Structure formats: C-alpha cells, structure tokens
Length: 112
Ligand code: AMP
Ligand code: ZN
Image (cartoon, rainbow, N blue to C red; front, side, top):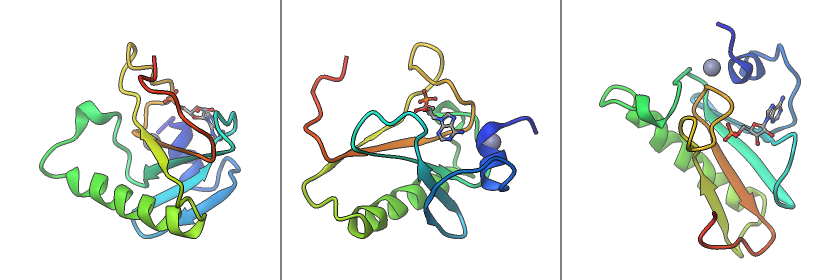
C-alpha cells in the first residue's frame, strides 16, 4: 500500500523512533510545531478517525496507553496536547490515522 506512515512502520522510510510496542509506533515529526512533537500511530493502517469501528477502536486505546508511557519516558510532567486532524477541513495531510503529541511550550487555546 502506498502509505507514508506504513512505510515508516516497515522501516522503508527512515524515522527517529521515540516509542514502539506490538501495536503502536511513535516517531519525531519532521516539521516540529513545538520543542517536543511526536507522531503516534497504530501500526495497522486505518485511514482516519472517521474509519474507527467497533473492530479497530482498541487500537486508539493502545495509542493512548502509549502516549501515557511516552509522557513518562520523556518527562512531560508539565503537560502536553494530543491532536488528531481528520479529513481535508480537519487539516489531515497523511492518510494513516495519527496523533500529534506536542509539549514543552505553552499551547494556545482555542487552537484556530
Ligand atoms: P497531518 O497534517 O495531521 O496529516 O500531520 C502529518 C504530519 O506528518 C505533519 O506534522 C508532518 O510534518 C509529518 N510528517 C510528514 N512526513 C513525515 C516524515 N517522513 N517523518 C516524520 N514526520 C512526517
Ligand atoms: Zn498506512
């Protein structure tokens, strides 16, 4: 499948790994929007949040379990933000569901 993030999981495109387990892979965003900016993904291809079903929703839980571990590992005790962009108007540019994990600066709200 011609998917950038599937290729990153397969090691066909290089990435800077932050965390990995059976279900989840996390790596540094190539264009960081905060001093800490990771992309956290299920290893299984799911196109977007709009494709979450009763069968695959456990992978979202696995992503959030991983995020809690990464926050501990990376000492993000001051807080962080998790962002999912979904679809064209949601700002999604890569068609493999992913969660931005942003930290180490004050993050504006509302995000705009
Ligand atoms: P989104 O706009 O929500 O679809 O987010 C896609 C994110 O993937 C952007 O923040 C990009 O900077 C990031 N990205 C794109 N290609 C790569 C890559 N090869 N390695 C790491 N991050 C990437
Ligand atoms: Zn994919």
